Amino acid sequence: MNVVDAIILGLVQGVTEFLPISSTGHLVLVRGLLDVTGTNALAFDAMLHLATTIAVALYFWSDLWVLLQALLRKLGRLPVNQKDLTLFYALAVGTVPAVIVGLFLESFVSQNLQSPSVVAVVLFFASFFFLYAEWRYYLKPNREVITVKRGLFVGLFQALALIPGFSRSGATIAGGMLLGLSRYEAARFSFLLAIPVTAGVGAKKFIDLIGQGEGVEWFPIMIGSATALVTACIVIHFFLVFIRRYTLWPFVWYGLALSGLVGYVSFIS
Image (cartoon, rainbow, N blue to C red; front, top):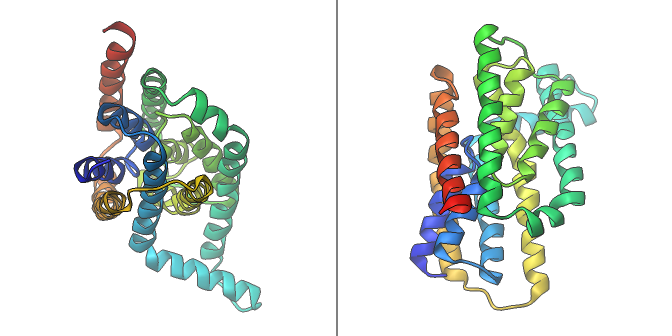
């Protein structure tokens, strides 16, 4: 892997991780085009996930500090804002489904579903899932708040992101909308829910990398990770501004177009 490849992959990860267009699917496609494989690909995956975890944690630092204070006050039996405590519990239970599904199916998915043809098919069906969420939202705009039960169900939607081509942020935002949350609240909860998941994935891949004991080209990997971190911070900000005013329709059309393109290349050409 050279520095240019690393920067390209860092940009792809930073842009797609928090947009409803599947970062995993895009990385599968771009890595195939750049022919990046082996130990350096594993290391790069680990560092990219850790970089985007840092990005979302930095952006939502004030929210995380409030949640930590709520937890500590609860443990100390002090008065606590119930809304903050409910959000903490919702994030905790929402993380569980992805962890359980990942433990049982991650190996199968990495060995059998990491292909452009799978990405094409999943992108197609994921786009229609987002379309359905937008249609339901149009019929009845949502005004509900996050609860522990809703957090758990959003976590179940998040587990769909284990399949390459199914966006984690798209699954959780659309799932939150179907459960009664506004687009903005669904997006905010989605980003907060990403922190334990992306951190866990990054840590696991990093441990796998250490276990292999092979040489890694760290310089381009660090350059790519820094690119992903900065890009992700920018994308998070602008997406939250965007989602306050607009719908998921642009991402639906993008997913359908990309699915058609990748499907044509994989199945026909």
